[in-house]
Amino acid sequence: MGLCKCPKRKVTNLFCFEHRVNVCEHCLVANHTKCIVQSYLQWLQDSDYNPNCRLCNIPLATRETTRLVCYDLFHWACLNERAAQLPQNTAPAGYQCPSCSGPIFPPANLAGPVASALREKLATVNWARAGLGLPLIDEVASPEPEPLNTSDFSDWSSFNASAPRKVYDTRDDDRAPGLHGDYDDDKYRRRPALGWLAQLLRSRAGSRKRPLTLLQRAGLLLLLGLLGFLALLVLMSRLGRAAADSDPNLDPLMNPHIRVGPS
Image 1 (cartoon, rainbow, N blue to C red):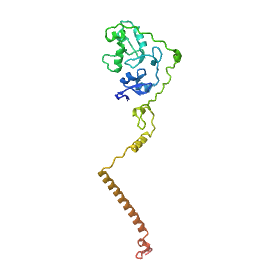
Image 2: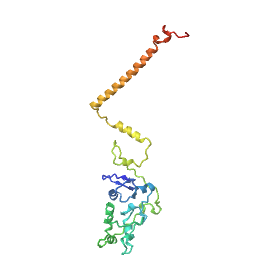
Image 3: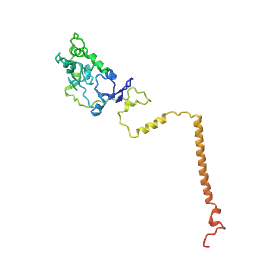
Image 4: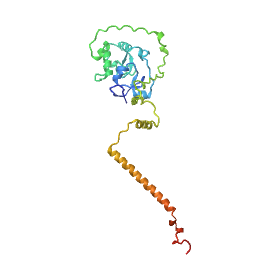
């Protein structure tokens, strides 16, 4: 579980594999439409991810995408073409996610930004409108996507899906100089063993001292006076003991009234 950095500050277990931040469903729909997002526990188990569409093996960032309620992400054109090939009498449960075999249609009682965005997208095609219980519409043939200029891209067939991800360090973004960073920015970074002690010393050194009240001043003066009195007693005791040790009148051997020896 973590805290999303958006103004809503929602507690969420969703984690963006690309930007390495916790995200809520509102941010997922608004700012992470082409990112691989799953649970934080899955990221801890395996942080590698495939940035390509599982249906066409082309990067997700190159085309319009659609996220299912299981949070798997596909090109909308690929998902639409795959589902349109099924028979028209296919039950809604027959439309399944190509990755996890979960349902494509969100449950009727499921609410949330991801489910709402998916319903709006599914309502644009007849095969999905039938599954949603909506009347059919006259579909307009979508224009063929323009062929990609292969000279501007590398050979995607040689792309290694398990290549290590890029690290997007967003800790320096939107941070004013002289201000402490948000705890959420650095909670995934390894900390030194005595880091808490250094932070405590910095906070105490940087904090402004409040003026003492009259009662606090009186108590402080009383404590200082008591310590001074005790120190004076110790000093006088040591001086008196030293004077007694050097006094010849207190030496038994020098006293004529005291005889030391055999009687």
